[in-house]
Image 1: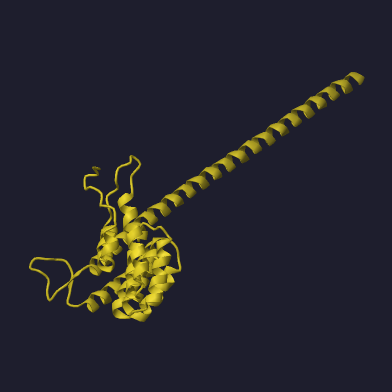
Image 2: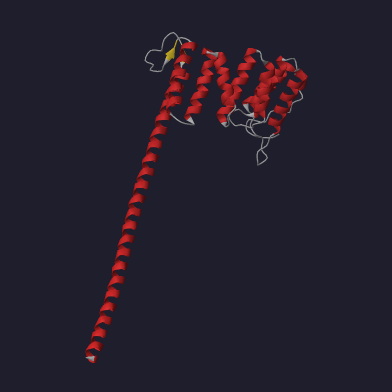
Length: 269
């Protein structure tokens, strides 16, 4: 009996060991299976995300291409010739008046502004405002001012357009203030030289001939004395050449004191 009990105890102990081993094995199997499921779900999620990103990139690329094409068509209208009729064989748009052309251009740019995001929306709004200078001048100035309050190239262009409108309307103080602001931005789309040239012209209209002459003289002198990194003269800009001509009209004696223009070939003598 004692031997049986010992034998039975060993069997029970063995069974408990086996059961415990099997339980651990089952748990490990379940855990591995669970991890496999998690990994599988993770891979599926990554694939879905990748497909989503690809779809978004493709959509944006296609959307950008559509916007660029629409801008191109609108700009063709914006720059179309004004004539009684198109030349024989021409497929380019032609308008009989500036009013007609501006109205059509505004319509095209409004479609772009309503459908696409930036930068196309803001660019379209700028073209709308410049064409409104023909169709609705007060609205144009309001829209240009709103754009000028922004940032970036379009804001500078809008401020320059607004300054030109103020100058054309005879609001010379406002025009001068706007041109002066632009000279400080150092923008590549409206360079300081371009803004300074207009500022000097406005000063001359206001009777401030000395201020105008000073701006023009300093501007042209700096341009003609400019050198590149190798010490060679930098070609004079169109704005600088125009400033020299403007200075000749305002103050010929001061114009005669300008340094000579750089050689076209960059040679010094």
